[in-house]
Amino acid sequence: MEGEIAFADALEKRVSLLKGMKLELLNEIFQKIEFK
Image (cartoon, rainbow, N blue to C red):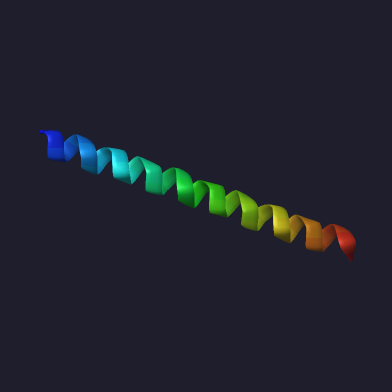
């Protein structure tokens, strides 16, 4: 059971990390569009 909780926790952290990276990418793209 503890292993499952640790796995879910790691998965959640990875997902939030990916979401953060996606947001940063979107911000960069929007900035490039605005500067054109």
